[in-house]
Image 1: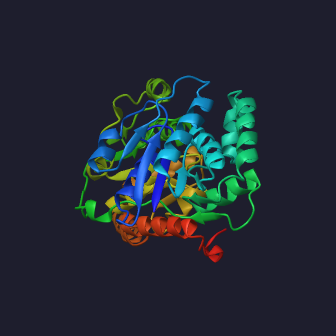
Image 2: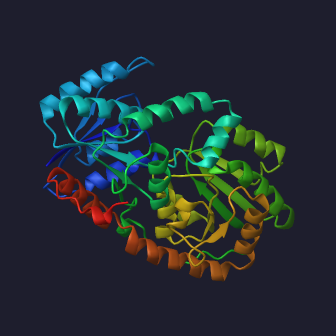
Length: 379
């Protein structure tokens, strides 16, 4: 079976990394090639190192959609794939029309809660809702083209399927995974007078960084010996820098920017904080679980498909007071928190190992190509 995976770019982001991880663990029964449309090469070397063939369409500008469709059609006719698997907005639209014209089955993906209430509120506040509504309508109008969808979480599948008006039994849920063998068992990291929190992820408003900065300032008033290391880049960095000054925590919070293999930094801290407003099924959260680091996470539905009260401290999303209280609990009850981290590691190793995830993904693609999909396993 030959499959074309289409992406907007090869940026160092969750979907692009997960696609790399999954394809890297396919069997020899599946030939996969990745097509990306726009400049963005962060993961190019990693894909090449994994032996995954790449094709760069090289689109530029806002009017590149038609060019993208034409070029993808040419590639489809050249490669003759059995399936196209598309992810991310621009890639989705291009792939749907090219697949329709060439009569190549397309599988769409749900990688984020694109139409959730919190995101809509955020866009309305920024006066971006009108443009967003247009793309929503285009998405809904063309959502019947994919023969099936793959979602990385149950809650995301239900939310997006409802927003797009999809018929039942069209979506397969397959979680994101990581190679558990890569994550060494966490050695005891006691602390005496200094407690290290860590955040790993893109710097975006929806990651809950505003609440995290305020919570750090509150905890700092009681516990002087704390620090927060932030690993990741993004458009929200300037705002984070402003909040660091505003809350007078420049001696506490350090912005390190994006670093390769950011998950390794989890072993240099006592606690991972994940305050997102909405997510896909987060690879960063799975990495924290596999690393065995104690976790504080917001109670968004995607997070709760990975962690629960036995494996993380859960707080109400956007609640600064609850977040700060959990950070204090993490400090004062750390021996119990270490045990919680061990439970999270055990759960992640069993549920989210990439070999299991990739095998499930590959099996579903084969069932679609062979028209043997068991709809009892779909939502």
